[in-house]
Length: 278
View (cartoon, rainbow, N blue to C red):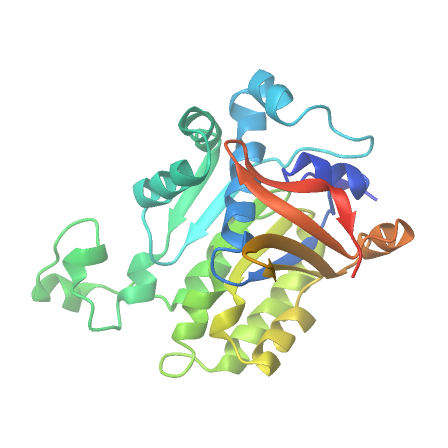
């Protein structure tokens, strides 16, 4: 089975090189527990492979047999612009690494589709201020899910796509779109992703969801990586649990791995060599 690297070298080596091509993976976690840092690292390291191969070799190392780099890397944001995303990445990772890696990442901002029917002033999110007359003439006011679908249809084949974040879509589920619309879209995405042959990472804050809502998102994806805080005495540790993942979980179960202890360093998200069994 063809695999694409997730960009976390120690994890990729444990799972035969990366995620199976055609996977939709949910990155669900508590605030600050590592899900966002995982997404940043995955985008930056895969982008680095295209923009600075020598640096990729230094930070990541050799690819496993049967693993292929994505054709392109796309980072989709509903609320933030590229500069803000890069600035936040630099708070997590070495600035030079982020600068080189993001040269190979296409950042698409869907803020206009996301905010256009909200009370948010247009000049807060649009490229330029728009007067009321021009607003009346516009006919490209596509729904945010439609805009996302169109972008993925055009760009996702063979690519790594990070969607930041499903939490933003959940926030609009009560007023502009039904919760069922979101879950149906993800089920359709799962079907299409198998044809596209890339990997899609969906970032979501688990604390913003009811257990049944999180369960529906898990059901609509191929894999779920759960990021949690674990307390022991006066210290807290970030942990990663691979809850489900076709073509991956069985490999980890063979090695009796249940939970990884994780860390954030200058090269981004990383997992410990030590396996934790609870």
